[in-house]
Amino acid sequence: MSLTEAQRAALVNLRSQHGAKFTEITALLSLELGHGEVGKTGPKIRKDIVDKAHEAIDTWTEEAELDRREEASGEPPTPFQRLLREYSDLGEQISDILDEGAGAE
Image (tube, rainbow, N blue to C red; front, side, top):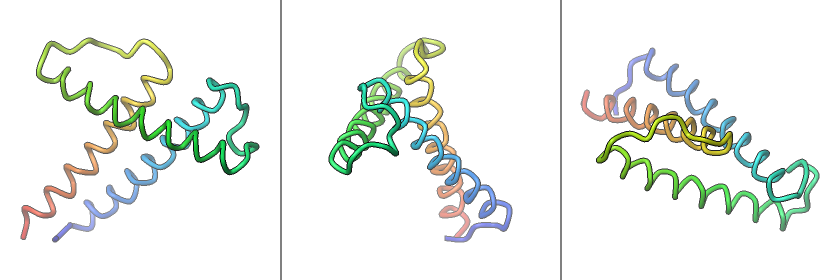
């Protein structure tokens, strides 16, 4: 894989944003589940929150793919869904850069 310096810098930035967005997702999910701040939960609850976040991301990704085939439904209605969309968008941007780098070989 051959990435330009600009692509590498963009990739580092996007991965950082992607990780931060996941942290936002788990924080909001923890509050919505009634656990308070995720950092103040025990390891078992924290693992449950992370697992639920991954499930929500997977579901969102599947639904977003269906929405692309149909007419777009507009802005997600809840803050949690907006975070999922933003996380997904960042993931797509990361994939695009990696695809560009793979195509440059």
